[in-house]
Image (cartoon, rainbow, N blue to C red; front, side, top):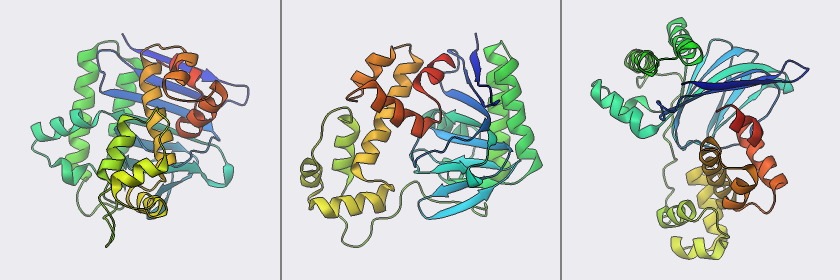
Amino acid sequence: MQAHDSLASNNTTAVEFWRDPALPFFEGRRAVGSVSCYTPHTHPTFSIGIVDAGTSMFLLPDRETPIRPGDVVLIAANEVHSCNPAERASWSYRMFHLDHAWLCALLDEAGLSPQMALVSQVLRSPRARVLMDDISDAMRDGDDALQKETVLVDALCELFAAFCTSSSEVASDTHADAAPGDTDLQPAHDHLLHHCCDKIGLDTLARLAGTGRYQLIRQFRRRYGMTPHALQLDMRINLARDFLRHGASLADVAYRTGFADQSHFHRAFKARVAATPAQYQLGG
């Protein structure tokens, strides 16, 4: 059974989340009249967004692109990014989050190259918008999981087959290439990922990377688009989303993800999700 909820305030701002337990590889959201601004953040999922009203600025570590109604934005998994309305004006958009492994398997089945398709880019095509509308209609109004999955698979395969080529308007690798002299950051990154809810010293990460603390910060910014601390917060919030989807209490989620108190958790969550933890949970 599909679960979704719309939460609106007196100023007509609303956010709605679409989830179905039978489709654990998909999560959708719709925001109307939003003035919320995102801090730079990542998703472990591959994400597809479409602008419905207003204008926004799509920021990647090395570029920024104005986006307008009808633009379809693809965001690679773990790509640092943000999309914020122009001049603090309101805008409306939809966003679909797709499990990365599930999507790679789907593209393989369809004879498409995940490496070529799953990059961050902006698509400007009426057909791309129609495909996103098809997904939205199915997820919002459908009750049958098979029907929803059929629409999703059909639309995604057509989208990637038709539009995702090396000539796309905006494209980037998930992470920047290491600069000459950079150390191997993977051990430090993996330690941060596996212990993101713990207190971790900068010296521990520097030792794992075989470099100094200042050099570590600079190399993390260059490689991942974030400092180690910002990346740790991002990892915690992504974990919190999973806990909230599975019904954990707000207090328990804040504690389990290493936040000192609920107010700190609330601020960090809203800055990256543009919804409060309670709104996000009620949406599912």
